[in-house]
Length: 180
Image 1 (tube, rainbow, N blue to C red):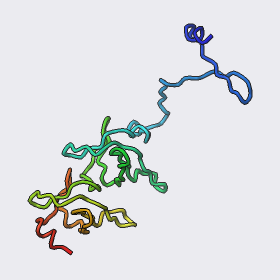
Image 2 (image 1 turned 90 degrees about the horizontal axis):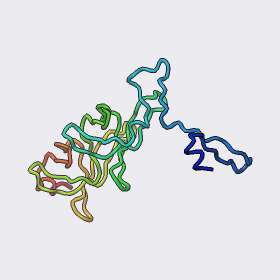
Image 3 (image 1 turned 90 degrees about the vertical axis):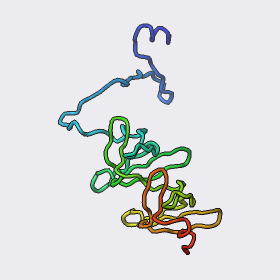
Image 4 (image 1 turned 135 degrees about the vertical axis):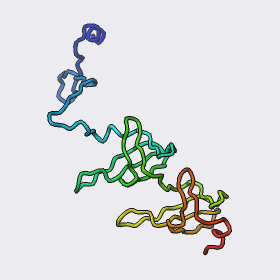
């Protein structure tokens, strides 16, 4: 019977077990509707999930996992970026430059946990262990840098010289070691 339905281009039936009747399976896989009055520069949020996230230097940070919408203004308030197994992070809307057909372009690179930290002369210091943000604005205030298994130091964001694949500090390794 199933072969007959497929060969004759008839719509297949599916049994709904709780009421014992057959219903047609409707397929809308290729249906596209232009809503009347909808502007051309509007898209649904789910079209952006899975797009690569890159900054102006071409550094890739992962893929868009979620778009976050402010419930009061209905504006995009940020995105969740997925970097791999259990490595998701949030970026607020001030990091977003624009969405293209294939990517989310960032206006500036984000500071993230787990990335290397170097001094101004590119000597390795450690890794970003934790980000400290203002609870009201979600703005980065300081970072905690782990320089070993048990040692870490908290640095103000003003101590950061640059961000990319690494965080570069405005100090030398010796100046970092002398901090308390």
